[in-house]
Amino acid sequence: MSQSPVKPAAHPDGLSMLDKRKIEAEILKEVYETLKASHGEAVARQTVSESVRRSAIEQARTFAASVPGGTSLKSFQDIQHLWTKGGSLEIEVKEQTDTSFTFNVTRCQYAETYKAMGLGEIGALLSCNRDGAFCEGYDPKLKLERSQTIMGGANHCDFKYSYEK
Image (cartoon, rainbow, N blue to C red; front, side, top):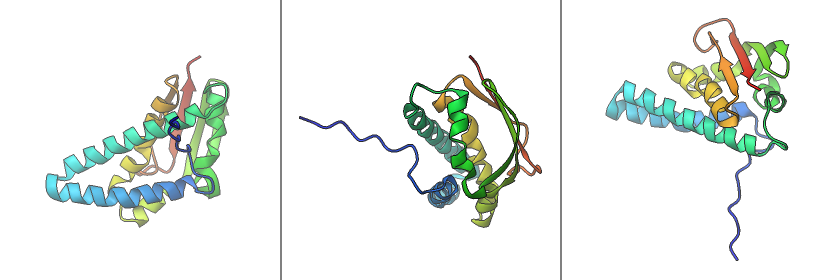
């Protein structure tokens, strides 16, 4: 009798999302630098961007599979604490309903961490790039609009999530 494969946890207990992203970035930094040296910056950026996007979709699918009763905007809101834990993101919620979740990020330790690691030039690929892709994997009815990010030089990020009923 064979055992079914163990499904990885959506997020390891005790590990902040910021710490998880830092570990991933340490690995991706070397991949990026290696590809940049061998294939040029454009290929390196595209490879990291696509790899992070695919990773975000897969991680979101794992989160979605663990939601009792199925995903919703409420279930998405309920896991936001993973990204804000320990002040990793400081947010100002503008609207929170069954179909809309709008907030501004006024401080982003993800951006600060990537810059401190010497990864400022690809910080948006490592972090901001994940947000819309996460929606794809979590629930196709979840959509993100954002016009600016701290990583891109703005004084805040403007997140506007909507949920199609």
